[in-house]
Amino acid sequence: MKPVRLPAAATLALPRWALFALGLLYILPGLIGREPWKNDDAASFGIMWTMAQGGWQDWLWPNIAGLPMPEEGPLAFWLGALSIKLFGWLLGDVLGARIVTIGIFAIGVLSVWYTAFNLGRRQDAQPLRLAFGGQPEPNDFGRTLADAAVLIYLGCLGLLNHSHLTTAETLQVSLLAFLLYRAVRYVELPSLRNAALIGLALGALTLTRGWLTPAALTLALFLCTRFLRLPALRVLRDLALALLLGALIGALWLLPAEWLQPYHSSPLTPWMEWNRAQLGLPNWHALRFFYRVGMWFFWPAWPFAAWAVYAWRRQHHVLHVVVPLSFVSMLVLLALCHADPEQGQLLPLLPPLAVMAAFGLLTMKRGAINAIDWFSVMVLSTCAAVFWLFWFAKLTGWPVQLAKNLLKLVPGFKPELDLAAFFVAACATAGWIALVHWRISRQPAVLWRAVVLSSGGLILLWVLIMTLFLPELNYSKSYANVARQIAAKLPAAPNCIETNVGAAQRASFAYYGGLPFSGMQDAHCDVLLLQDSVKVRDELEIQPQYRGKQWIKLWEGRRPSDNSERFRLYRRAD
Image (tube, rainbow, N blue to C red; front, side, top):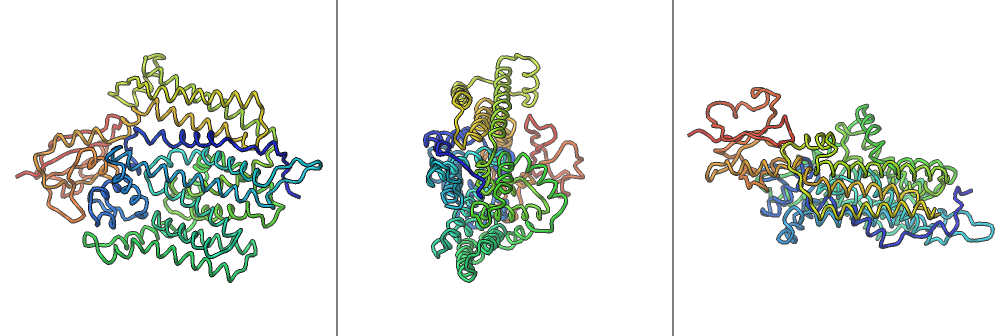
């Protein structure tokens, strides 16, 4: 017997304007006004900016102002560079590159919605028929599940920061959501068209972050079809077509790069080495990382998803559990087999977990749903109040201890009132209060009521951070000021700059300071820029060729918020 008994009143769809408004509130803060920070965001922007400013060689050999970046793949950077060329003249290069991020986010959300909708309207997912009628129609039931899946997806803590970065991981998670949708459509109706669309997704994933994940998910899809007892020969033929098409899409970059040899070299060998390094044997370090980070990274999707597997355990061969679970299982195995785990490897798990979690909502008890709601109201409202209190303290100096604790993180920063940011934050807070009042006063019976407060509260906190505290975050995490200081101390017309700075720093210095770094080919530069730590002696950190009297120091500095990192500028002695 199916574990679901639901009246039609519980399947009212979330108003489209509300879902659209939540999406805009989610994605726009963090894109507008934020400088590239000291992480992969700045490095990825550097690759896009170099492509947009450079020639055909930079499009085939991804690099940051001459620093080779053969890892991952070029698709995300191609899209960002095209976005810079189309919108950079109007919005600036940084915001221009992020326009494509909005489209990528939309692809992921729509794919999650349509995946849950198609699974939810299937007969094997429908709730039990009530004795006197009144059960929901299949399409209404599917729409409600799809709304719930999107709310869970937007409410995942791990997606929040990564979805606002101009990185390959951001594109990968949306493409994987699209692949999940196409896999559902193929399992429902095996056809060459659906197989070709799966191949399109596999090829795009290969150009985004390598061939390992697409290959593993193809295997997961094949195992899924065997469990669902689809004709084996037809499935093998269709998946072979998908793999062939995916390989051809990947060859659109690899073959020209190998034939044309941009900068007299090819990215193929280092790219293949990076792919091979992504797979190893399961290890204790990866397992501990997965457990420690995954507990909050996948929240609130993982408890609902686990409950869905338990609740539907007696229903064999149901697509809404088998397909997402096969993807989750393979992606977990990949994460546990990585020698150097990081958060970006966990992102692909979010779309299938969100879809599974939506089906877990169906069988949750009213007491559990109410407990989740009250937890969300209490915790998220308290956090929002604390954010407002810190904002008031930084502007007025009261409470004194709060102002002191905040401003010591950004020494030298002078807070100012931004009326536009205050207005946006105030409107978002008013919207949260109205949402809580609606939930408490109306006591709605709709299915998605269990996650609307979690998602709405998380979006509120993100909006508050990206409006009330964005100037402090830019001051703390951006290298823009350091880049301008270095540019001011450069000698007149240097031929090039040798450096050991990291990818994020190099991208920021090239963009904000216009520093002429040495290119892909070795060059004898007359200026040297070193990055090191004040806690490590020079003879341990600086390479031998950069020591000695042949270099004359011109400048030394750092970001005010970093007490260990240091930059030094030298020119070669005549």
